[in-house]
Length: 400
Image (cartoon, rainbow, N blue to C red; front, side, top):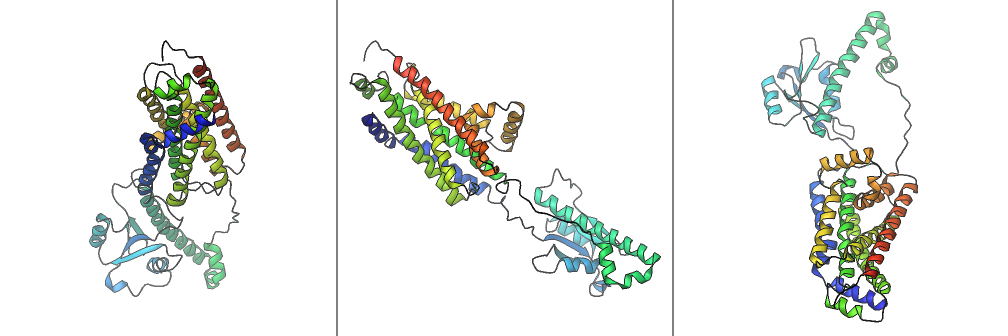
């Protein structure tokens, strides 16, 4: 068995296709994802909203206290709390030009009584605008509506009791909203949609690693390779040969997936919830599942050679990755809908199971969901290895 292990390891590391699919492919795809998603990650801080204010030259410097011009000027003051990136223009035509050019998300125009009117793009809808633009325009609407409501409230207070406005504390109390906020965290790490794509990539990479198990076992088949024919007439039992091949493929797969994990963690910056040690355990277990799947395909009693078996694994990988949500937002929605309608599919799809294993480690505060998925990976691997052993041991050949 030790000889079979060493032969399998040496053979696999010298096979270009193994290096390409098991190591180069995850690294290249991770780099592509890094550039694709680089503009989608934020630090949770909103940038000042670009907006224009139509204010004729004669009114720019003489805004009365409490007027809308003074309010937006305060909101545009530089600092950590800056909300607006304000641009003063003299005419509505200039503001329209800025809006059409995309330099501002809207502009305010004041009525004769000082009431602000907000103008945004005519085709604007929350569904059609991108996320950042939708948030910015919602902020502008909130600024205008809050000012109108606060002014109406103060006018009503002044009509009832004008002396009440002389007390700044009373005014602040009337305009303020007092709430008690208690911050709590219901997930282990701050949810970030992007990590799901990287976890799905890990699932696809794990299935790519099944090529190692397939090659190791297929090359031990007498009808596939000359090396397999020589092994068949040796004194080593078929099960011991299979065990050596599987262990060798598992070792190579684990190393390749560990390197891919290190690239994701250290270079791409993918978050694993601060549980990197447990994530490495998951890498080894997922590599075992992939190796078992490859061994099962490699042991199939079909007359075709290695290329046909490799084609079977590639087809499985591509199809199963679709239901893990790797191919974009539509595929992710399909995977979510399928998981809700048929929850058991998430446990029998190796790609989805690997993806969910890392996501459970990242999302849940409890380790129970993670342990359940690890157990499912181990159980699946043992079942596939049992099938591979039964097939590999019982095969017979007319000639070698």
